[in-house]
Length: 163
Image (cartoon, rainbow, N blue to C red; front, side, top):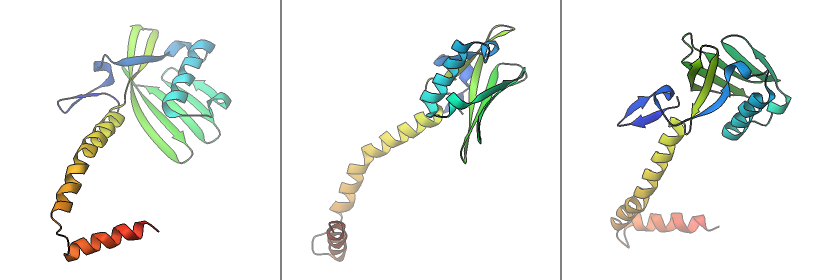
């Protein structure tokens, strides 16, 4: 789910002021400019290369972009305040929550958070883990005494790495 995390409370994309407009619902696929905005977002965020060959089918509450076995579906919820986007490419399928801001009843701005919460959490975990690795390794190495069997094992492992 996309959103913003603050003090371990996940806020929905609609609550987050840090969103970007992807497209205007009523203008896709009728407007080439709005359709291109949607495609640019999908290409940049998800690295989808097949969109230029895709076809678009739209109803009142759903939008489908298809090319062969690949597809993207964007479905508005009943109150039109959020949308669910599913991306299936090859054998991988992902699901994301999007925000919808009603400018007027017929004018819906479909929006995505600037940074997905999963990517943000993964980035934070990576950084915090990297900070602790040197002290962890130093702590382990300082407990091994030269001449002990553990030191001998570590020496063999290191020398076997240098084929």
